[in-house]
Length: 238
Ligand SMILES: C[S@@+](CC[C@H](N)C(=O)[O-])C[C@H]1O[C@@H](n2cnc3c(N)ncnc32)[C@H](O)[C@@H]1O
Image 1 (cartoon, rainbow, N blue to C red):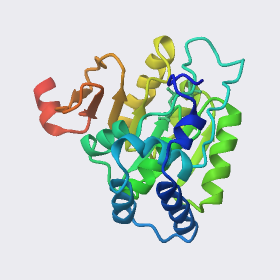
Image 2: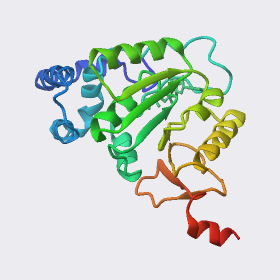
Image 3: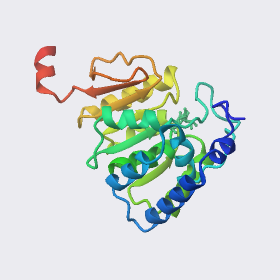
């Protein structure tokens, strides 16, 4: 039994054979680079909402949740994939497009980075502290020939500052406390060079003078936009 309270094998087994075939077909198309965001969305919308997580697990070849590494530092949250419905909300509320670079901070097996890439065409970077998860995510991305999805191993508190190409930073509750403060300081430095959005799931409000919270239609998703390069905010601050 996993942390969802339901075995992944059980979730995968519950997927209808027709959906299993559809997932296999999509994997073949992905390998041939023949899946536009519109095609992917149409395939996803064919799947009943309650079966979408099991279907995506098949597409991304997740048969069971891996064990977390024992040396996961204190304060770092173990791996739990973000539900498909929540990622759809994030992508919509943050307005992610193919012009963006979406950074999943704490990307686990890479399922959300993959989903964001195929839904929108955005470049995606997964940053993950657990080497075994990074390895597994890289293997899947290579197998599906994903050109715009990369996985980087490291502690976000040390590595995030180097991901200056990012435009949307996604945090599904990867850590809190001092690590979160350090990550936000690095994001503030990036926001001095370009406007960024930060999408948070199940996180306490980010109380930063350089961020404005965008209206949200979902109780679990908060999207913020940086204001440091916005002249109207600069005028208001002076
Ligand atoms: C709740 S899971 C989120 C998984 C992923 N974002 C998704 O949506 O499928 C949190 C992830 O953050 C990773 N993590 C925790 N602390 C981290 C850190 N300091 N730097 C990078 N990754 C970290 C964990 O290993 C875990 O995979």
